[in-house]
Length: 136
Image (tube, rainbow, N blue to C red; front, side, top):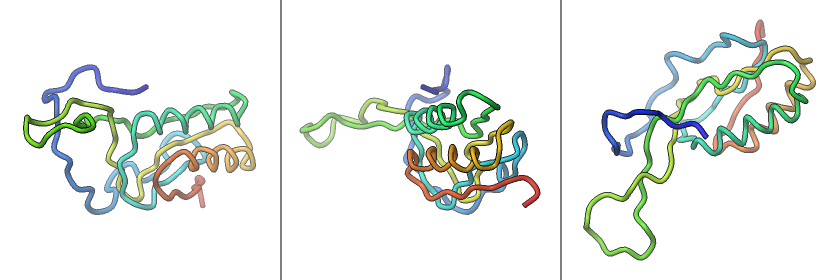
């Protein structure tokens, strides 16, 4: 799974996901893409599950680009722990996604296969998404 090699700070604040995407909202590499429609935190495991769904549906033909990266550490305290005693340890890595962000791009396959692959990927993600294509 994806995670940063080094971090300046080990734990982050939760933060809010405000506004719409000001960059990463156009197709840059492939002909077809999956665009987020609502703000959400997407975990590294969800990104990996979506990537696997895409590559299996495409039968490893064509190319896949992952346009998001999980760089936010999310901490959790263990179950049944008393209040206080600091912040919990890092459990997983997530990516803050704004509405309009392109999540995945694919190329080298027909539109029908691309739609099917990206709809399978969308089922693995916690946010509403939309299929987009170049020139449309």
